[in-house]
Length: 220
Image (cartoon, rainbow, N blue to C red; front, top):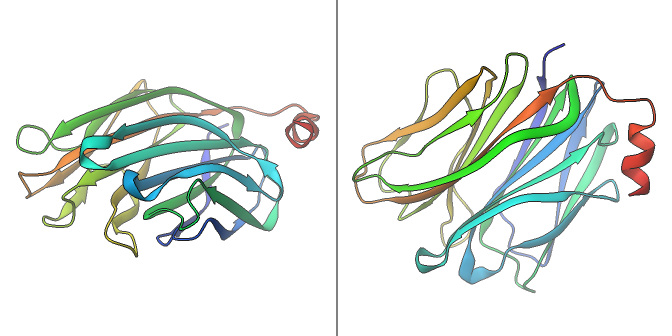
């Protein structure tokens, strides 16, 4: 069994304390990941639920000096159907940011190889190497300071999900996915030589979930 994409939804306006994003989930052995790009001076997501079930924040990385941040959230066995992802921000005015919602089929309900990186396009375009496996699926999320001046192009073998600014002052984010291998390099190229970036990547593990996985996810 291999991990496949079920559906993706993007939302580039998170400027409310509570933001609701409708997302359709289907299939079996399901997994949900949510990536967030945000400007740190405008607040950030503090919690989120899908169909009333809480997601887990897997990783957060910030460059406070340049006011950019990136988060990764997960939920095993999300409910099927069209349901609401409710993002609660830690500021009453919300956050200037972008959310990308992914659901997958064929997942064991776990992720691995999660890592983060940072750099400057004067010496290196956004890139990260993620330990994965054949049959898994890798995703990445990149936040860029001074973003939008140059053009960003997704790397070979990756499928772009988001490439652009938020609806606010201008958080700039990138996100994509690619089939797994022993090591997967997620990268983007740009003509801009003045951008600072931070990113997160992870691998969705292939497999099957036990019959009571959904019940456990709801209980906890």
